Amino acid sequence: MKIALASPAFPASLEIALSQAAALIQEAAQQQATIICFPESYLPGYPNIAQPMGTYTQDDMEAALVAACEMARTNHINVIMPMDGYIDGKVYNLAYVISAAGEVQGYQTKNQLDPSEDALWEPGTQRTLFEIDGLKFGITICHEGFRYPESVRWAATRGAHIVFHPHFTGSDASGNTISEWGHKDSPYYEKAMMMRAMENTIYFASVNYSMRYPESASSVIAPDGSCIAHQPYGKPGIVVAEIDPEKATGLLAKRFKAIL
Image 1: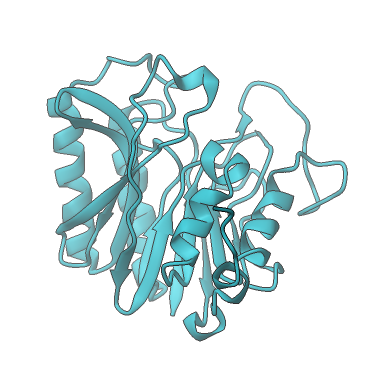
Image 2: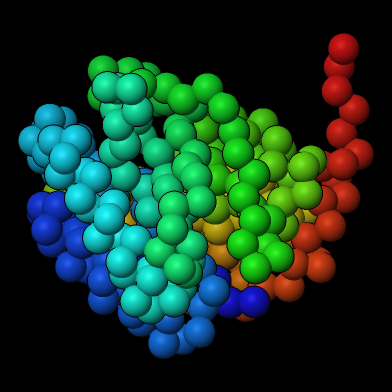
């Protein structure tokens, strides 16, 4: 099975984000990927960097979701679209799972917010296991996947073959450049990706924006912790990787003995 990770340039507006999404979804479908995942809060863009919170209304975001569903249907590809989602009048950082028929299958909220996000979003409270075309998967969003490994183990112990990890690290304004994946002097993020796969014996697919000064690359990690594919730093586009769900045994996750 082929999966695709989208590494778009950071969008200056919701309209630009949707235009970029349309092109990347079409490219992933042309490469025969079964599913494509976008970075954290892609619609309308991570709020600390793009437009301030509240620029786009609930109606705007609902229309954006409808547009994403149509892209999935037109290209016959499953899509994980992270965005601002409104539930009972509150706004959440979440990721919708959209089927190749263009239907919303559900969503995963970001439950463990970074302290800097407490004023931006409502924290979620539940986790969900998804299944598309026989592929079982979970979703963990940025901070919670990097610093709360329990969010990945939850899915692994329930049979997930892979956990998708939309995130945001880096800057277009300033920072250091990275040239080697997993380098000892780089930020810890790529090392954490390896650990989430190894400690659970599943695939881990971590998805970042393409920025001038990225702190991590969009990467697909195998159950043994090896990086089997990653997007070149600073280059917008998609990375497509072939995975074998049978290799995602979840062996180490299933051997976990909870402390009572």
